[in-house]
Image 1 (cartoon, rainbow, N blue to C red):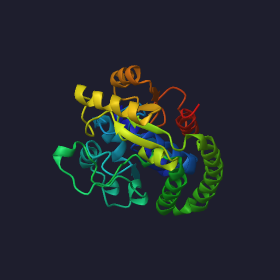
Image 2: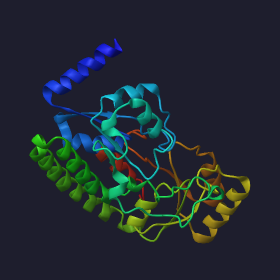
Image 3: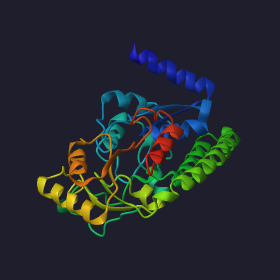
Length: 293
């Protein structure tokens, strides 16, 4: 039955001239759908509620990659633990790293937090820089442009279609971002702490200072000693919010809030990561709307 479905999908794509696109994360899939619309079948390889660092490379994902014309990844080593084994087993030369059908979005972003050195004592540090650039909505238009150009390269017959859709995407999101900028004006200068350095791009865009992390090192769970230090930092620096993601336990954040008076903000990190974030627009609306209410 699986072979029949695979052959049926392949035949349909050939008949209708559709591209098969695999997106590492939901936000990438949603941008791609906005540009490609009915010219591509887009498969999302992970769920928004998952830890993006640790997606399980299930065999079921290999079947999708075997027929893929384009694989789009976040990059900056965010997928280092799960995309390489899937690619190796897919047997699809079109989407291997460096091939025409492999798109690493991080290569087109100005990455932050690039370490001067990397060793095991520093925890789970990304050598290329912080990979969570998509949390800054100002990067959306650039990401859409890169995806539009890649679709046009692989499917030149529909180049004008992708170009028009990108223009509409750009107009819509530039207006949305102007609204976000106005809404975030009152947040400038406030201080926060984070569980993990997940929201650095967003904070930098809006002049918000992150003064500590609940993790003593990236990828290392909070310790009692470090928790006491964070409580002291919150009190001394007048921290307003503790930024908590959905895929780490919020037990430590709630404990620190109770001892310090700071407020826990549980924020989405991707489309579908929380209730009410099932679209690209509702995701960013929720992310921005959580601050300075």
